Image (cartoon, rainbow, N blue to C red; front, side, top):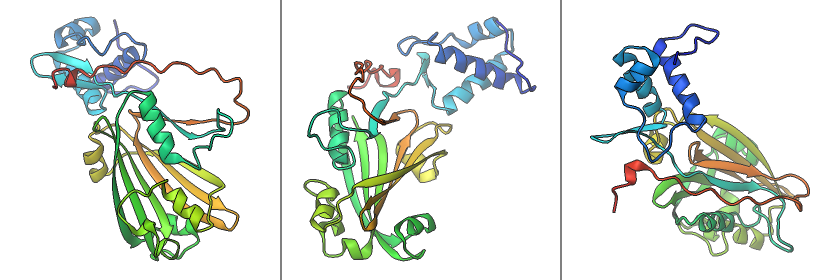
Length: 279
């Protein structure tokens, strides 16, 4: 087995890491079996032991592999949860994910056989430039931010922050650091600000230090950031910024008539060897 050279000459360990990524993507390695030991990879590729070790270090830093003392090196697989970020409802008279986002998260977790827990926080902060522009405010104006820290089976899943004009949230349950019965959407409906549309902006970026510490991902694992601006007939209502770890989440958008959609069974959740001995 040889390391592909590619179009540009790069360090040998990086080319070895790229080939190991390919083999992982093609399913050659499984989560319940250790990867070949360093001496075997050294023999397969005809490279020095240090080259193998550096290549494996790259994949460990990316969060693809995990070294277990005395056991070997394994794939580090997080169960990926599909989140229906937007799509027509599949059941007659059902409300869509724009109307009941919290219920969508709960339903998806239940369907996957996973436990969803959420911690709430409320803050009054100065609006970032991008948030202010989307809400039609001046940068630095006070806004109310309601943060939800979601965990699946106690593993960090997403950070969601809903940004409201201070005048809209004042004197309402949106000022409380607790979940609202029926969701924040119920409060907005009571204020006559029912959300009827939204625009999403999706970007991928590397996490900052605090985000990396909370998500507990590898240093090479990016975040998927969904910024949603919701509207009623009077204008923007709120900005919802949700950050997901890219190795655990997949956002699903449905467009058009999905009446003939085939619903495939969810794949079985892989076993993470790092947790195999946990009680």
